[in-house]
Length: 153
Image 1 (cartoon, one colour):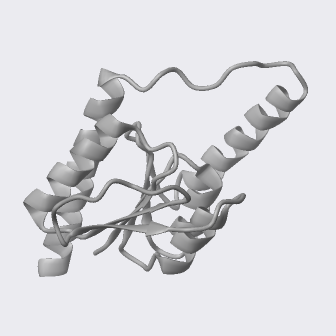
Image 2: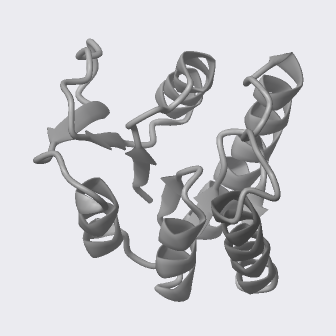
Image 3: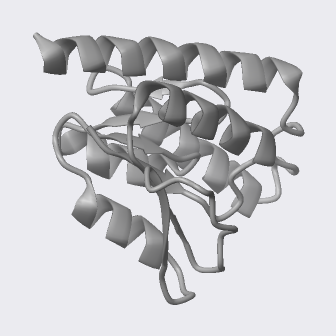
């Protein structure tokens, strides 16, 4: 199992949670971003710098992700792409995207985007907070432990 992180805009608090879990469980993590990511002192934690531009990091993650891998992203279209390949996708706020729910999430995202574009709705999600950290930590641990048990069986 490999974890890929859509690291552009990834919350620091979620990054710390992810790194602790990955090191504890021995799961490799690759942060993909279009800006340099500070290096972690572990061979399990690496980063990939991609050129700037729309969806370049997303395209690279979608290309690398394989069935059973985990992609951490707030980008619902990217989540849809990797889930369709058999990977798992987890939002930094703790929402797990699966084959059962990703199409609904994508439809809601598209509707909200249309409402914002039409000026009928303004603003975005609330600031990343303590509840988000707890939800992310819970879902991450739950998914990693389940996947590692499956791999070991």
